Length: 353
Image (cartoon, rainbow, N blue to C red; front, side, top):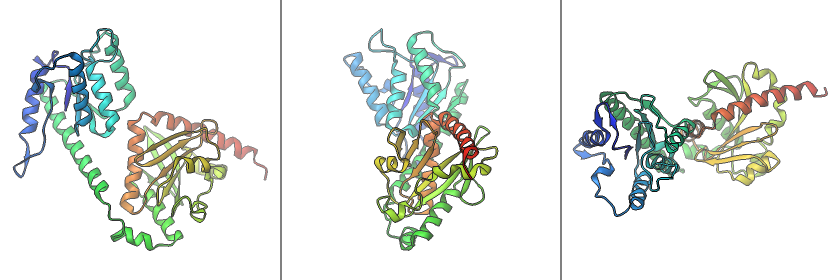
């Protein structure tokens, strides 16, 4: 789906005409004579009876399509009611992101222009806060180049994601090898797979460093080698944040620590709350597993689910950091890590020897 205003101009052309041209270019590409893409633009559809039915149809397509590319020109688009503060472009983007953050990409063709109506200001604020994947284009030539790059990146990532999801055979190959392992060996394997993930700089022992815009976060890596309901497996981790004061020297110029736990099987929200020791926490469940943060002591833990092989474990790490970026939670995550470092230092100072 190509989502944008259609009555505005870009680089001397009506956006409606630009969209038709882009649709034709994208749809002509094939693999082994098979059509790969079908592009939806509202210009191809007959006018519906009312603005409301047209609105509903656009949102249906935003929800249904596998890839949604938003061409943002600084305006939010038409509304059903003149007093509405959410335009159609804004609504399409929200619906698409709610269906899947990963399928939405924004190309900024506004050249800094932002409409003056409330709906335009609301749309700009939504985009700034969403931290969605985006690129800029100031000409039709640049737009075509960015569009192709975007489609290639999204297609590639969705194919990889689909292949991983389609791999259900957990009793063959490496999965079977991991099933044969005892707790000690499986714990080491899970931790090693996390530490070797591409997002981390591996440190000594079970520590890893993650960098975000020059700010370093210390991660302490753990593993639960079986179902969390099995005490002997859960005890491998316990409540690791209770000993954070012992690793103050590991922090140095890093913030944190953040505890990342690879779980061989799934984990529930109630199990996470029991591990934390209190229920009033920030708790987010997503594809990677569960992220939990304490509002007072700034404890942060990441539980990765279904760490049944090296690839699955590394992928769970990737999925967590993808969520962290696209959700807009990254800034809060870093701030909590900064606060946690201060709290750990104060605890270490007050500990009785």
